[in-house]
Length: 74
Image 1 (cartoon, rainbow, N blue to C red):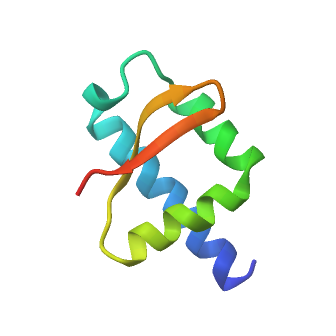
Image 2: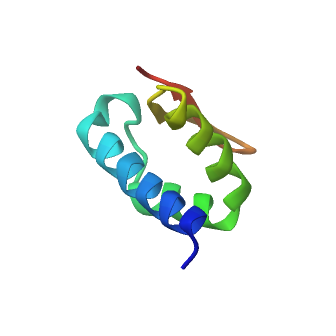
């Protein structure tokens, strides 16, 4: 496993923790579906990782016909 893959795997864990901690931000959504969407579009993880690295706290807050929307909730 490369260093980048480790960073992305750690990010998914942080996103899951944040998702479960702040359920009020994403009522009627399940982590399993969010995680599946992230794995289907790994390029999204790169953007979320950059948000984390610059002090942001991305969390999913909505869903539209194109997918899940993440905002910096720091």
